[in-house]
Length: 260
Length: 310
Ligand SMILES: Cc1cc2nc3c(=O)[nH]c(=O)nc-3n(C[C@H](O)[C@H](O)[C@H](O)COP(=O)(O)OP(=O)(O)OC[C@H]3O[C@@H](n4cnc5c(N)ncnc54)[C@H](O)[C@@H]3O)c2cc1C
Ligand SMILES: Cc1cc2nc3c(=O)[nH]c(=O)nc-3n(C[C@H](O)[C@H](O)[C@H](O)COP(=O)(O)O)c2cc1C
Ligand code: FES
Image 1 (cartoon, rainbow over the protein chains, first blue to last red):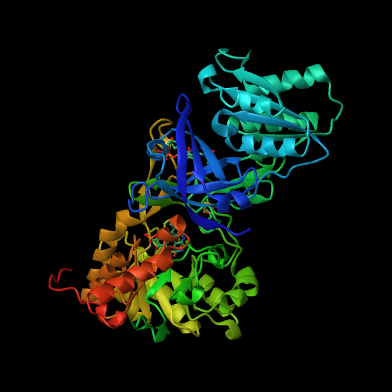
Image 2 (tube, chains in turn green, yellow):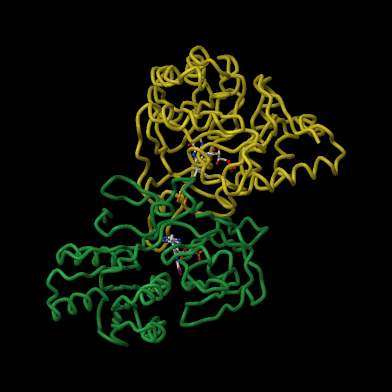
């Protein structure tokens, strides 16, 4: 699949929850080639050298006329992004990496931690297009950081929510809910595939559950990146076959492959 | 506009090359973005005698106008490189410069001997200066921090290779001209200045270094003024062709390095930001030459007015 640098017009850039924003971009060319789980490298300023590098963001929605990104403001780069206005142009490099490999015969357990939900929305849309039964587990620190739940329910997925402070849904981690669900439903080596994205400790916990319950799965990993295209070897992820590149061999990896 | 330059006895179509470690192993990541025939030369990712897996992550982090990396030379070793990558590289419509590094004179000799004559690269860049690996048999961390070690290693390379040797030096020295002199004395046909500057980035939240290897090498616009000085110093005191490297992100940066004395330049970090950076930088450089009424790119080298410092 050909990668491109496109100048996309910002259709909207809105706050959707505390610290979280969604940016809608008009770029049919990029949308056409994008798959759920892939990401784009976003240039924050065409001329400035600070910030210098592009920032990687998962593709949140794939539509006919463009894509959208969902991001959390965590530092200078994402803060600059927050201040971009409707009508501004922004340079995107993508689509990058390997996306999710949808297992059509299996039920889907989608597990999101924090802004890890970003690429899982596009995934769920694709799962539903393939008429796959989907259970969506969302975890965050607090109620204010839970978003997208309604949109995901509307797509026909069953949604379970966990917050660390108990302000919404179960009190605890999203993996606690997952474990409870598995216990209660006594799945007998079910035909299930896990798709997960979130902070590393969460993914590690998911991997442990998947291993004990013998459920197959895929995780979308996050590592510091420079080029995003496999040219600098900067985004190494430790796997059972040695280091692999998050931007090129991933960001989606088989859950059994990762050395946590 | 005549962009051709001659350096180390080779004619290059364009003085702007791409730097080792910033253009993949074979450049295939860039084929959607760049016409390789327009690239002066591709300097390949440094290879070593034996395979290396590289440093623990994180390996890259952005700092003010810079990129700090501790990649650690992951590569599959020279055997794999000459059998798989080099034959394909040689088919590309540009000059191929193979970067090698070793911790001993024997390593270097063995590696060069493994390059088959029918796929001899246009030149070899001897990486004496990667801050992410420790070199043996010298009291310094890097070969290019020790004039004697530099001289010995370059001499072995020159004596073994059937193509020109370019010595890539570290700027982490008291006096880079001393090292350049040693390289020249040993027969290097050119020097590449500079590799990255050693540095550290801190995560204040966790109160620990960001990089898995603690120390990394700084590249990008942040180092340009320092790299320009290294080029100027060597140009003023050693009679050897210079390939200027460090923080080039635009055509004007190329002109600056050439004015200071570089015969050619390499673009590194910029490739990692925009895979089509070389194309834009070349265009901007041509525009500069036109604006200044300069007909030949080669005419720019060393034309900086006044200011002999060293
Ligand atoms: C493949 C991929 C997809 C991603 N998708 C999304 C997404 O859809 N939505 C989203 O909000 N974020 C996503 N991220 C993370 C996002 O790229 C970073 O949050 C962003 O680059 C931070 O930039 P900044 O300049 O705002 O922060 P900085 O000022 O650079 O850093 C702020 C803090 O975040 C840490 N940090 C920065 N980058 C990373 C990183 N890559 N990994 C771990 N820690 C980091 C820094 O150490 C620092 O503590 C993704 C990352 C990757 C690799
Ligand atoms: C990610 C990365 C990897 C690098 N790997 C190598 C390498 O393998 N061998 C080498 O000689 N230099 C390596 N370098 C150094 C560059 O070739 C160049 O000397 C340096 O980055 C300065 O130029 P720049 O500011 O244009 O990037 C690397 C630099 C970066 C950023
Ligand atoms: S970010 Fe450069 S290889 Fe992955």
